[in-house]
Length: 330
Ligand SMILES: Cc1cc2nc3c(=O)[nH]c(=O)nc-3n(C[C@H](O)[C@H](O)[C@H](O)COP(=O)(O)OP(=O)(O)OC[C@H]3O[C@@H](n4cnc5c(N)ncnc54)[C@H](O)[C@@H]3O)c2cc1C
Ligand code: SF4
Image (tube, rainbow, N blue to C red; front, side, top):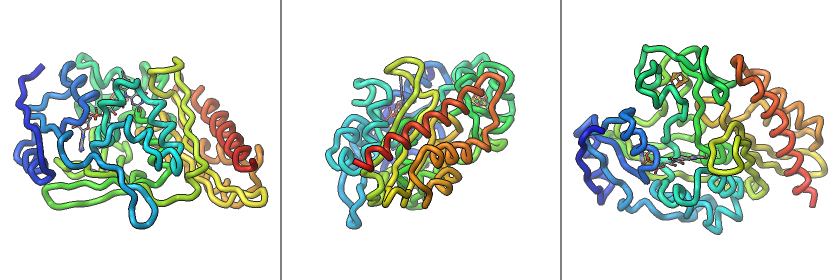
């Protein structure tokens, strides 16, 4: 492990200035991903700027009925917040489905969004990997890829994004705010992760050295009836092999509003716009739900060993929407 300096930031401007002055510096949230990557040599920062004492640990209502979530709020605190539980239950469920209690007590909102892929080649320095070392190749395409992407991938990288929280935030139209050396900015979470293309090492729309300061959830009455369901190879303490965040509003048996995002299928949490278009205005029944899943998964391009994900996701989408429709009818 490379020797590194450690600084504790007390204000946002100071934190951003430290990163601007040193391209080898990294922000430190809970450290649950970054420190692991430092131990294996995937990350080799010269300086860690600890952001946990910044005044970004609040969850507050916004004037228009949404919620503003500071970037250093822990995953545990966010999961149990009464407003999140009441108005955005899919977010609580997604957070509680992630990692373990101990990890959630450390992990922050900003760090969760920026956690890196769990692709085994990415963390194995003896292997090539376009994401870690651009231009070296992607051994996963012809190698071990049973939990890799079926949507939106390229020959250059087929890794999936591992965040559960990010899938719920994507369905809920969250907006990420940041501060950079050039000033503040914001980006919808649906545009936060860049398409893979031939630059899988460029992962997000954040300017270099930018600090995530908050995530804003807009008011969304539809989200009060929302759900997150995760499929994994063990009952707990495992990353998803597929997940769904969904919300539905049904009136007179027809779907008035639908939100759907899929996890562990792409390099980013995947907003299922094609499925939403089929759902909106259609009867809330099994045929509609199956048609919606098929519309989204028509774009799937599975690899030899991950074709099961297409069937898994179809069944998961239909099952979660059926459950939500039943809940709506009560
Ligand atoms: C054993 C294990 C199991 C796990 N299982 C799951 C799971 O099932 N589901 C799931 O979703 N996750 C899972 N995780 C991942 C976990 O959720 C992440 O490690 C965690 O959310 C990262 O948050 P952190 O604050 O610790 O980030 P850190 O490790 O501190 O940082 C991660 C990255 O974000 C950057 N960063 C941190 N804060 C900011 C900020 N405010 N602005 C800009 N950059 C920032 C850092 O520089 C770093 O690049 C698991 C992790 C482990 C170790
Ligand atoms: S899938 Fe992406 S992260 Fe994995 S080896 Fe290929 S380029 Fe690297």
